[in-house]
Image (cartoon, protein in one colour):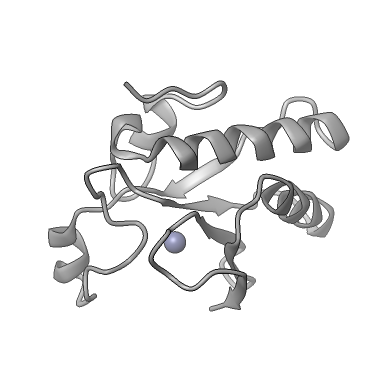
Length: 133
Ligand SMILES: [Zn+2]
């Protein structure tokens, strides 16, 4: 049974495509909690990540013309990736970044045009990368 201090099925039901907390890896959930604690302690005591995409099936990925190897794909241990929307300004963008690094995420993407982060803890993809879209 997957558990999280801050996130529940409501947050994952709002993701596109919709999924459940059980579709996620426990490590991903733990790192989301650590990053949320950090942002709450240092910037906004009510902060919660706004999860815009999370676990995806291989079928979903292939229907979008993708290979199905994304870290978003729901594997036996769960999905290792979420996309986090930044609904704030450049200061919040800074604190989200600080929180993600503090939580030990070593694969981060920033989409400046659409104002979101991709973050994952995949064991099979390249580590220590910061990419853009
Ligand atoms: Zn992503």
